[in-house]
Amino acid sequence: MFYPQKPYVVKDGKVEFEPNTVKYSIDANSNTGKQIQKAKFGIVIHSRVAEPGADVEPIEGAFSTDVPELFVANQNIKDNVAGLNLDSGMMSKLKAVDSSQIDRLFNPSELRSRRITGFPKLFKQYINTKVRAGNYDNMIKDFVPWIQEKMPTQAPRILEWMQANSAGVSALVQSFLLISSIKNGIVRQLDKNAHEISASIDNEPGHEGYVIRLPSGLMLKFVDRMRFSQANFAKNNPEL
Image (cartoon, rainbow, N blue to C red; front, side, top):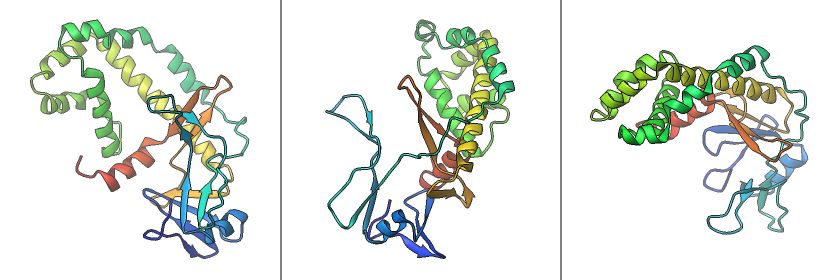
């Protein structure tokens, strides 16, 4: 998060550091702010693996350290998230999407037989171009010239398969847009909670994202791609 070549600064009663895309700010007189001002290096540890290839295990809370010049941040936000509200209208629309059409569109055996096994991955790459552009307008229409330029030899087969499964394409795009909107609504609600460490991206208040652990143990990561990912692409991979 910070180190001697890219140190924190104390400004207007705040300790600030900007490791990459996100700028973080902490009250200089808080316990955390005072700890940071004693350190030269700041890190955050959020997961571990027991051995190479093992499942990633989340880490609860920060590590304590006897190294006086090392600050280890607590990645957990203690605010109560039980009051989060999901947009009921969008949830109803999402539940109404016929997911079987998406399964058919991405059916592995069909994609193999048509020699377009990379179609799902390509569509993900295409979505990233829309993130870079800053909008999800004309998702289906704009895919045509994109795939024709990206994969000219496969494009006719991919487009033929999409045309034969127009319901699956519509269901895919609709579900993606609905899930993105629902997710961003959750992110905005979490951003409004009072955090000891505040954050901003291009001067807009908000953190990179949040990882929420469900009672089942499943962890979900919520990132507003039109805020963080777009800014991150522009800053770190502008030519990709």
